[in-house]
Length: 185
Image (tube, rainbow, N blue to C red; front, top):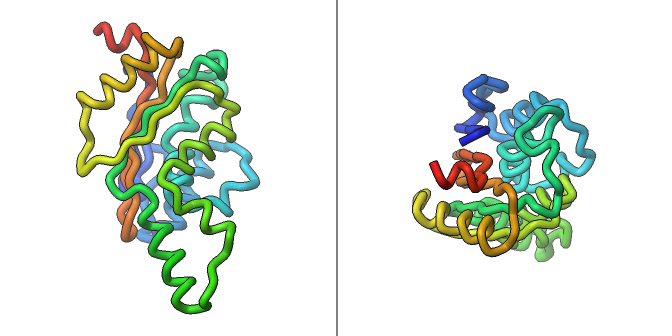
């Protein structure tokens, strides 16, 4: 793996270097981890937690001298797997419906499990192929197979691949950059 990130309830690392530590508040922890990257993204505060987690875990690869900084945006694919999908936002959306008899259309868009991948693609101007999968636990064999297909059959040079899951104030993500060379090793 030529670059990787991990996020565990506020502990955020990039290639083993700790960038953020937990405070005990999920929203504060997500904001602190994002701030540690030094990236400007005006829409970040409006994104749901799942999209924030994907942005945090994947954006380190695009910063100056990051693993994907020099790659063509149309040759970078994505494979994201998680257990809860958009359930964190779904619960908030339902609570708002129950309380107010209506909910914000801005919140509705985040009730789609693949919106985090879409937000990330927009943020970094990616045009490559992508796949969003749901699973009870990380399935490395399925992730490797999906990456192999994107690299071999869809012309991708690199794939941002990882597990991202957030629900009930438990947030975990592990992302990596996968290339043909990586899969051959």
